Amino acid sequence: MPSTITRRHAEHSRDPRPLPTRQQERLTQLKNEYNQGWRSHHELCFENFLPFGGRFFIDDRNIGDRRHGTIIDSTPLHSVRTLSAGLMSGATSPARVWFRLRLKQAELNEDPAAQAWLSAANEIMLAWIANSNLYHELHRAYEEMAVCGTSVILLLPDDENVFHAYGATAGQYFLATDAKGKVNTCYREMQMTIAQVESEFGFDNMPDWCKQAFNDEEFEKEVHVCHAIEPNDERYVEGSALKHQRRFRSTYFVWGETEAERDGHHGQFLRDGGFDEFPVLAFRWNVSGGDVYGNCPGMEALGDAIQLQHEQERKSQNIDLMTRPPLQGPPSLKHHEVDAEPGGYTTVPNGGREAGVRTLFETRTDLNALREDIEDVRMRIRRTMFVDLFIMLQQIDKTMTAREVMQRNEEKLLMLGPMLERLFDDGLKPLIDLIFYYLAEAGMFPEAPESLRDAELDVQFVSPLAQAQRGIGINAIDRFLQTAGAVGSMKPNALDVIDEDEVLRLYADILGIDPDLLKDPEVIAQLREARAQQQAAMEQADALQKVTGAQKNAADAAAAAPIDPIAQATGYSNPNLVANA
Image (tube, rainbow, N blue to C red; front, side, top):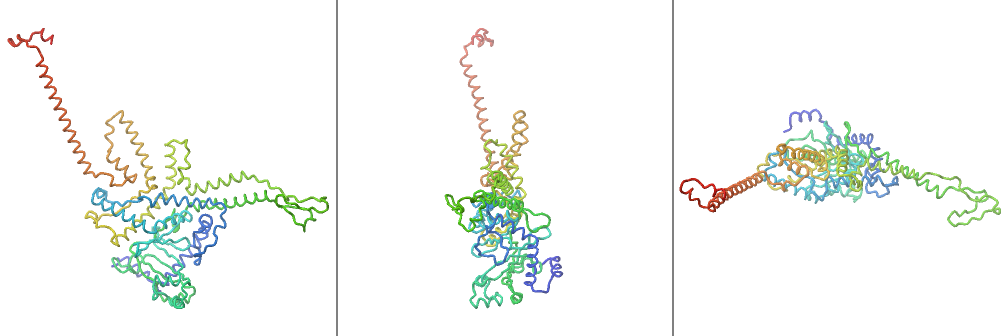
């Protein structure tokens, strides 16, 4: 049953109007908020960095006209491509393991059975991710996050592949957040044909005007479909098996072109369902204040991108003026054809007494200075888009020392650090949690050991970018060990402060080493005990050998000594014999 707070909230917020009507009105509110505050900025960003991104009109679908009209210099496009490819390979590379499951209870991470189950579950998740379309959508999401600050992926259940990723570009989705600034509402607009609507939702769930269009065989007629995902405050029932009573409701409805078409829906949904977990992944580069949508490097470099295209256009115009300048000539040539091509011949009237064709004015633009300024603008764009970070190996000065290279890496990673923390915490960690939930619901994991019944799962990212971030901590450990080694060379007892086992395990954890490569502490203790016993036995055998050897040497010496008759008779030795011996 719902809690008292939930019931009280539902009683005070209940609206007698049909839910589809209320959701249509909320969609209008969210669209107005976006259009008035963000749309024009996003349009400029896409126009200059990602021309084929963004859909700001509902019928802007499957249109293949040229969108690069303002692009003369493609540096902004290449910068976005490099940044998105760098994030893809550095954070979620399909070619390597980029996350590991672990337990929040540290003591359980040492349990061999728990480790084996976590390792198996990790491999299952990576296999299902590789077989889905998630990597394609992640790359697109990184592009849009770099260009307009926000990108969205809907990860929904799928009957064939357990889950499927649906991408929505800017202008197609509208977001809202809770009091903590976390995205908890997403309205998405789609254009579907009548045939697609009937196939996806069924004929009986279609509004009357869509049924009529289907009966009239207008299969390619496009329908404005809206998908709303938001908290299910009014109808949520804890533990309910009914989809429309889950924590988040998910509804599809048709937005008619006219009031009559909208009223013809009669409060009916194309589909009415819900989710226990919020299935929308909202990637935001950075968020300021109470903003719903994020800001990003593309917005910071927008002025440079516009300036770059302007300067390239002016440079081309100046080159044209220098190579094909405007001409002037005498009035007598007004109706005569002038051949301005190389080697051309033009007959001048009046026996050549009038001046011939000549340039109207001379253009003396310093193209070298213009090129230098253009290159400076290019460098600013690349620097703002972190291109220099992701192609670091190609730009490193060969005269730099290893320490200088390490310091430069630290500086650049620190600049990217806040964005990576938000990417991991607000984007990729909810993604892993959602995938784990879907696979667990589908029964894709082996039976968990008893030690994991009440355990809490956690995610550790081991991608190159995550390791590089943690690698900054390794530099501190290296400096500490170097100092300890220098002190230990003078005072060996100082090394007793270091726990060598913990140092190596911490190193392995920071570097993302597979835990299966490390031996269990119990196994290590047994090996050390056996080694200590073996060492003790060897020392005992060596000591025994030394004692036996000393006794043998004493016996041999006594046997080789000359016989002293005086000593045998009186008990006193002969000094001469002792001295000679």
